[in-house]
Amino acid sequence: MATTLEWFGTATFRVRDAGLDLFFDAYLDRLPGLPPVGLSTAAVGKADYVFISHAHFDHLYGAEAVARGTGATIVASPESVRCLRDAGVPNEQLLMVTGGETVHCGPGTRVKVLPALHSCLFAHNEHDTAVPCLGDLGISAQERAAKLTAMFGSMDRLSADPVGRALLEMNAAT
Image 1 (spheres, rainbow, N blue to C red):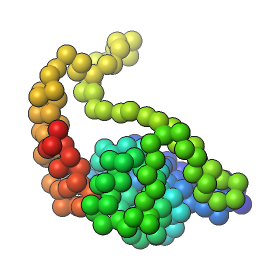
Image 2: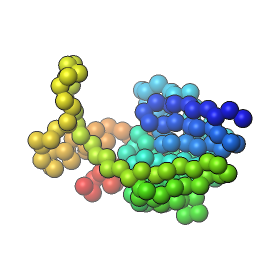
Image 3: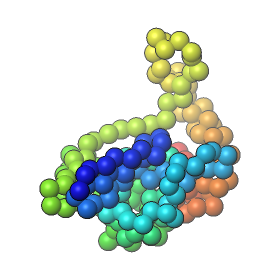
Image 4: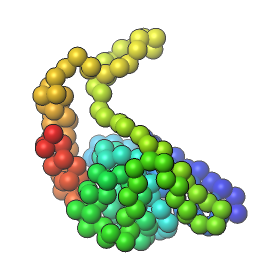
């Protein structure tokens, strides 16, 4: 069986290898107004593992639906696991990692979890690609929180979903 790699936009990939279906992030169901990516969470018939890179909606959103529909094990950070647990994903399907671990997915298939830190840096809209893109480093924590609230406040569909609600509540607490 050949190994295949499919990209569904943003950072969502599916790798099929040795009879396993491995997802990296789960952002398959786009918000209203965005074009579909060719696969929805409802159409995922098989998933053995879903590796979530971090707890931003465009990576985590959809993982609970894939877990529910397939019984997949979700491999994720403590914050992502908390969101998924709050959304009703059973503990037996959650594998908490913090970086440095190796996940044995099946005979001959292993995934090395790398430690990572990611946060939202609001970037300028500069057309000159030679200008460094470092985000709004000069703004206060309150200004950053206000930008996040404005951005997430417009995502009504996200608030109707259990994981989306958990993400919005997490943002409101910061």
